[in-house]
Length: 522
Image 1 (cartoon, helix red, strand yellow):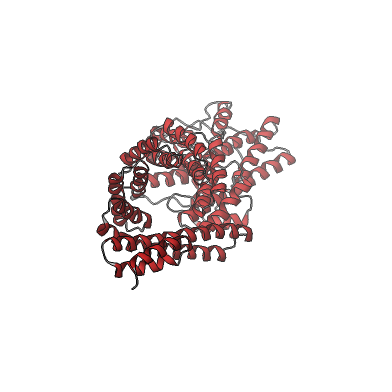
Image 2 (spheres, one colour):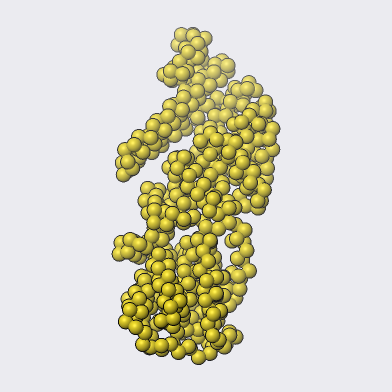
């Protein structure tokens, strides 16, 4: 923090419309040698700037303050607690009490000591969303609106001392970053730390929303392995860029050093779900749900993971709680509950849920497709046809490929003996599934080229190879059904090539042979 001959390290500058500033407290300028060394050590920890070093610095200051040997320590403890309060918000450590500790310590100081601007700004800054519930985020909106109105006065108060006071500089950076995130830059350029700024300030500048500086964070992590929180933001950036393995490495580093960091576990859950490792994803999401009740992303993520693991009842229990909490992710909640209820053959309840999901996500093709599957389970073939038509239209409208929607649409047409309409959809399904197979093979190549451990590669590749078998079977089924449709239209010449291609799949061989026999010689 730097030595100061007299007066408190924390200086509240006067500004019009804000509490009046009194004279700075006069401190003993000649503490003992050992105390001076401890103060210097704590100051260095603050400049170092990681969450762990700030926490260690606060412990030193509080110890020195308790002995009475260094009056400066009590004021520096307040500063360190204020810095920790902002770091807790940046990291989503909502269980932290650093701001409360700062207030308690400030209240013990003789008047006219005041931390008003720091307290007001800290209370206004948002938490990292991965570490708090939606209710807590919503509860901050009045404070955020206050900040967006008050920032000119707050900024003026902080700016005049930012060049020499790390506390004011850090709060100024936090104010500029947050305001710009919500209001844009406008005509006011953001404050930039001076050359040679300590890691504390370089970190805060590097994690501004929409301007995250990967290179700066990488340098901080390289120079100080204890700066574990850099890996949270690097992992978040990598996940946004869909570089999943890089994201996983950073997030694993973050939770190794900070096991109680909910946003890192949440993002790690997203990574594992994207890699198709639902068991690991479920564990990560579950950690968040234990630490942060009502964290909807984690609740939904755990429910999805359990769904893929076949633990349908457990998934429904979580989804029921999401429904009870209300408001957020309700469309997804109804979709996944319908998905699980369908697999438990609770088709009427599943139907209610999928219709409720559609009310909230009316253009979502996966909802249409699930509604069609549930309609088939309820023997509502005409309705199923309509649902699958919607799914095909919505997927095409998004420029996406979904082979199953076209296949099942064709299947409903066959059930109604609409052979002429069904045949083209089955024709298109075959090359569609061929593209799916190609994509799976590319995924296998990516896995094999990765730096994943061999056993993990083998497990993921084995799952992908099972997917290839399923896709090949769907290709063969598409061929067989196209052949049947053409045969029933009295076009054996068109039917025979499809039947021959279906013949190549062991599971379709018998049916294809029977159909070829019915078609007669070419």
